[in-house]
Image 1 (tube, one colour):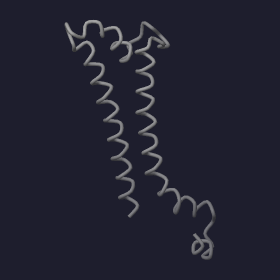
Image 2: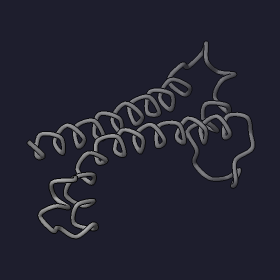
Image 3: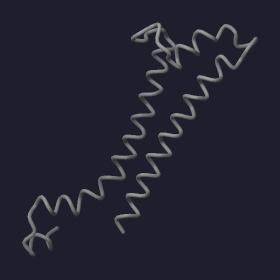
Image 4: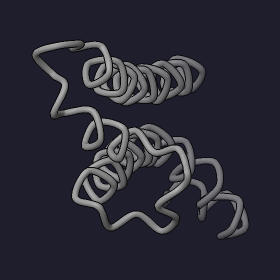
Length: 107
């Protein structure tokens, strides 16, 4: 940074070229984690019955409504749980792939 200032680069350009690329990977990882946590939180709230719209389709609410028939027909419970799991894993894999792609592009 001192070398760039000595050459006469403007401060915003230094921040954009030196710090910006180093922030992309941690920000993508944080975004992926926050999205995963929010999916789990919304599903948990729906499972407990505190959904915003009780008539709307919600994976947590579907799990709660079908849990009494778990021994008779387990797919009513397992299907929403598997979709939640696949969605959270998929979002994290996409965020990691974007982060690693951004890190490779910097070199």
